[in-house]
Image 1: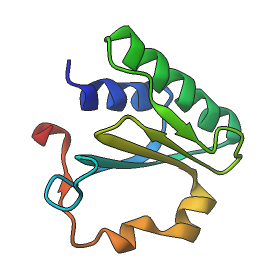
Image 2 (image 1 turned 90 degrees about the vertical axis):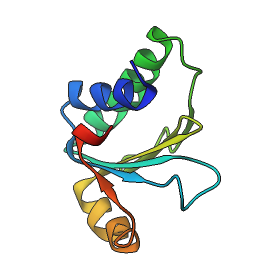
Image 3 (image 1 turned 120 degrees about the vertical axis):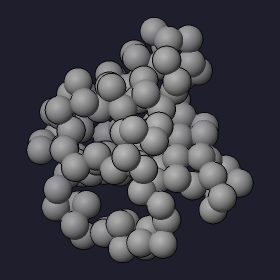
Image 4 (image 1 turned 45 degrees about the horizontal axis):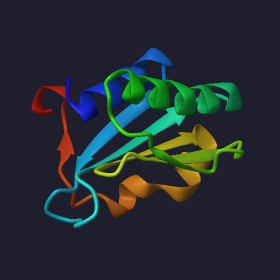
Length: 112
């Protein structure tokens, strides 16, 4: 299983909403994919950290760096070539990263 598939499966398992994957390969020298997703509450936000971390370890990928671990509204999971943002719906609307990514190709599950 590819790392992107492992991460997306983990996000699906904790039932995150509005998961979007952006192809950053030609836009960033630091990472290949940017994932944006929404959690309905803090418990789901925190569960996403644990589930992504556990799934990556289970498939022998390195442990990701976590930013905002104690946040109630936004966490960032840095899995080296994949960056995962998990927001509460309100925080996602406030930051509106999708507006900045309008020029970036959004990938469908079939393209991964």
